[in-house]
Amino acid sequence: MKIGELASVSRCTVETVRYYEKEGLLPAPERTAGNYRSYGPAHLERLRFIRNCRALDMAHAEIRALLALTDRPTGDCGAVNQVLDEHIGHVDARIAELSQLKNQLTELRRLCQRTNTVESCGILQGLASMETEPHERHSHLG
Image (cartoon, one colour):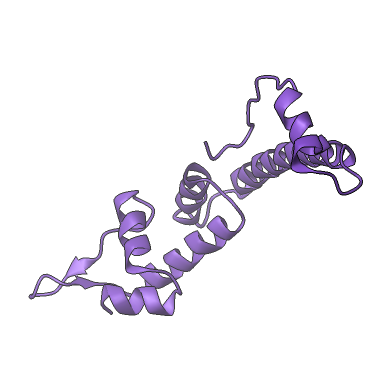
């Protein structure tokens, strides 16, 4: 199938297919005599796998690791568990960050419990005066 067909069947864009090829996540397809890319069922299966991993917010490095393991089907799946355990750790860290963010926003919201003028808005005053600490995001996605 051509790239447009693959993109349509896998519910992504042609640009996404090309991007995953460029990143080395999707192997380059064979070319037809007319120099069109020609994708097979293995490309579709791999693209779906990649998209499912991305839907779980996995980084390309994690996906690459899982794909390498998939390419060795008789190997031990302990390494798969390790990749997932590390990803769960990333998710836990992000949840903690989001929880802290929610608390900060809730505190700001409490500064303005009734209708005021913009000039006396507690939220805007709080935003103008709050001291922020250097924030290091712990996402593995960068």
